[in-house]
Image (cartoon, rainbow, N blue to C red; front, side):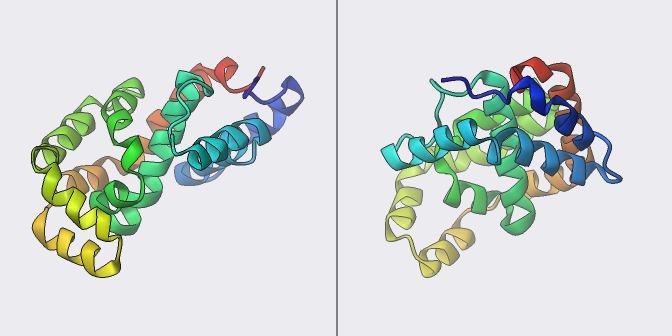
Length: 177
């Protein structure tokens, strides 16, 4: 199934690059290219329904990179890296590769360092996750600290937007047929 937008949408996509704020361009691109792109959104929704969550066999690498960074950028400012882990666990493995793909190796390294403890202690984390409650989330937050990544993310937030926008502009053919 073709998940890129049709060429007739190219001008609408290009208009996303010219918003006043980087954050506005970033989310306009994610929305236009993925979330309001019927084919891509259908793949994302179907993968969730099948329990796969990450539709690696249906979206191309550039689409997956944009989705990964967009999800990270939705969750981290709202509740830190723990919230990303809690709400988007299937996307965790894609984060370092995606950050490096857009040119943010230092942030990818901070992600890997910050998640090393959690990954080494996946048993305790999975016990919190199984309970899937606000109480379990709160207990998990007191057990694991992602301060290093959260600080690094905020230090690089504008770069996340700028580099991802640049990534999309250089690979427009991966998003628009």
